Length: 237
Image (cartoon, rainbow, N blue to C red; front, side, top):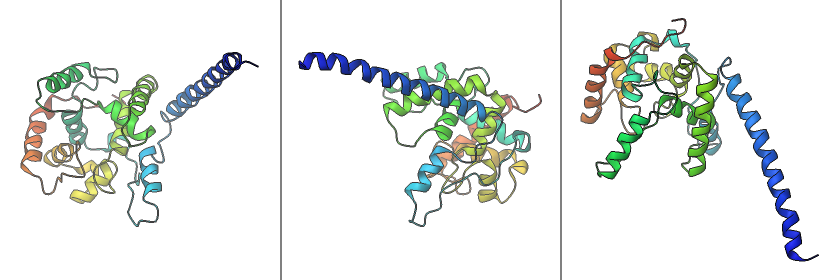
């Protein structure tokens, strides 16, 4: 059989199997996201990835130790995170195009690079995707962000974010962070403590809320200034 004919027959088979794989991926990912609207995730893909990577090394991987419903996390904490990470959280549909445009202008004018990830994007990335940066991960992050915004309420997105976000070495979520840094429950965090915790979120492995550098203190002041402008996202309201 001529090579050209074999190639013509082989290509439709490849496309067929790619189509089948994509179909099952979409079905499984939709079920995955829809299920987590009602069930708290027992772990995140990133935490599982880190646990496998560090197996046998003696390092302690972060894990979800104690889930806190949204209304049991201090209002100061909820507002501070919005002030520091995503001030238009309630008004966007997963992608803050205002912030994206500003970040692009900063890059063009060489003012430096800054992230434009929303809380929805960060939650999708943490819960469903691996940590290594790549084009494919960015594409999947956008895809999962759309699913999260479709199937979860804003309250659910913030609740899962606050329970799964990386807050330092071996520290996952608001409850673990409050206890590790201030030795209190996340329900009792003060306004200033909440602002410090939110201030280190962009780089929790480099910065500390208990030994803040000048830049962290600057971020804390900005968050304290903006915190009263933030809505109180609360289940049942």
